[in-house]
Length: 171
Image 1 (cartoon, rainbow, N blue to C red):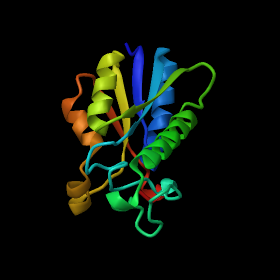
Image 2: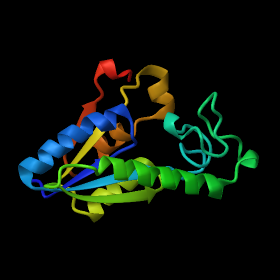
Image 3: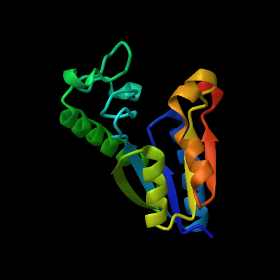
Image 4: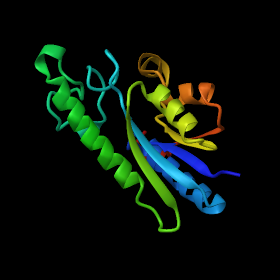
């Protein structure tokens, strides 16, 4: 039923919760899991060009430890930040791909708008199922930041399973 399961990860608690479901599904269906992280490179997007960076990434060049935001364009070497974000992405997919030996795993780091890159990867690799974590944002935060998972759910051709982090995880 499922030969290729796409697991986009951002290293969040939601992604970690989804990983358990991915492992169970892959084992049950003897499926290949494609672990993907997307580095957001859009102008004005959530990556190298100037906004939110995952809290684990605050040690990177140009990222304010107080806010977790990348500095203004003139204060940051975009190529350096992109290289650091890509290296961090490789660490994320590598960690997420650590699983029992009986699960076939493939990893990839993509660049671009996260929801678009996820959808394109799903199409290019014939994903039968997409399993994603959610951050559980609500209200203004959700409106301002948007939801990659929500966009994937609305636009994907393949079925999408969403997994929310346990409330006790601090999400």
